[in-house]
Amino acid sequence: MIEIIGFIVLGVVTGLIASTLGIGGGIIFVPALVVFFNFSQHIAQGTSLAIIVPTAIVGTALHAKRGRVDWRVATLVAVGGIVGGLVGSRLALGMDPDLLRRLFAALLVLIAVRMLSS
Image (cartoon, rainbow, N blue to C red; front, side):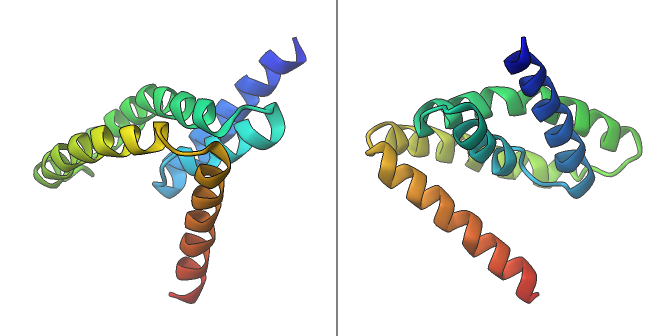
């Protein structure tokens, strides 16, 4: 029961942060699932991708209602994202989980440094 409550709280917190700041929920979901729920890196990443779908739909619908979505750009980036998602998923599935976790952590650090310095 505690785990179920933890998952729901994680969803609420991530949904709030992702929708407020316009970030991908995976930046929060993946580390949280690995650190707090002992998921493997591969399972955390796959689960995160599945979680992001409904979160993105709700956030997009609300922003679109206010006219704050550039559909042309969203469509073009989505096409690239589909190709990248196919290639990236295959790469990730073939990687050692420890290497994958380190690469993900390095990306988070890089993003944090870049954001702090801008």
